[in-house]
Length: 162
Image 1: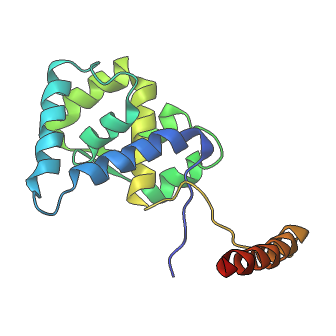
Image 2 (image 1 turned 180 degrees about the vertical axis):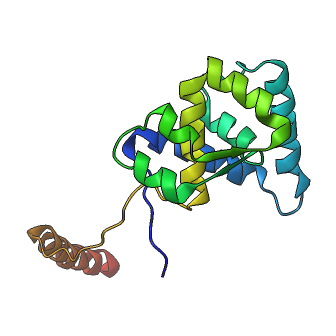
């Protein structure tokens, strides 16, 4: 069984948007839809690097096919708090044709780029946003429901007579 990775709290909202967007564009009946969407976003991003300002989930989608991340190194750095840009950038390899774009993003939109890369890291790890702990509930509330079922049972018998 593989290790379960959890998304840090400061990334949860953007991570949920990222995963929902990716799932919505990955259509088995139209496999090119997702790649066409990424190509379209990248073309717009190349023309206007700031057009995704405030949308790190969309920027992460753009970078999905452009960067390679060293998630084994990056995830521990970002687990409890947001790491510094200098730490993040050492974990990133960039496709050579996109280096000018990434340089522009790093210069002008560094924080958003950092968040997008962190989102991609957790996406590549298959992280989840919350831990599920099922515990047996022995509270009185359960006993109250049993009493309610017994009470409703008597009413049902009464109603069935008429």
